[in-house]
Image (cartoon, rainbow, N blue to C red):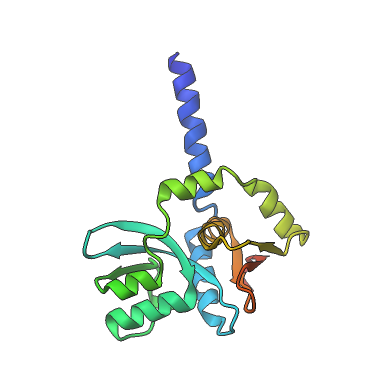
Length: 176
């Protein structure tokens, strides 16, 4: 019985690691900064840690880079300095800054449950090989952002399509 529990715990732990960052901190930082260099109407998504100063709740979230830029500007009056913010951690007390980044759109549990519905290994393989370059979402903004969150944590840059907004373009990140 103890062996079964131990094996199950190990499998759950390994699965959790797979959902969350499968890339180095250095790669996460390079992806974060690269996302802010994209100034087009088709922005990149970013993943960062955010603290709601009202509740003390800290969580990892995903949002479009310009939305995070706007929230930081609203909260601090300053721009994001990617090179000097290696923690990718932000604190907000202004409600509209939290709303702008959809802080309460999904929970970690919802993200983990959604990840279980995906074949992440296959998606990564298909993106790396160029067989998969986009993913379409039919009106499910929450699903789209959770998908981007999981992909970014696995080294895939995610760009929102500029016209319809329900298409995400995928590219495996490599440092130039």
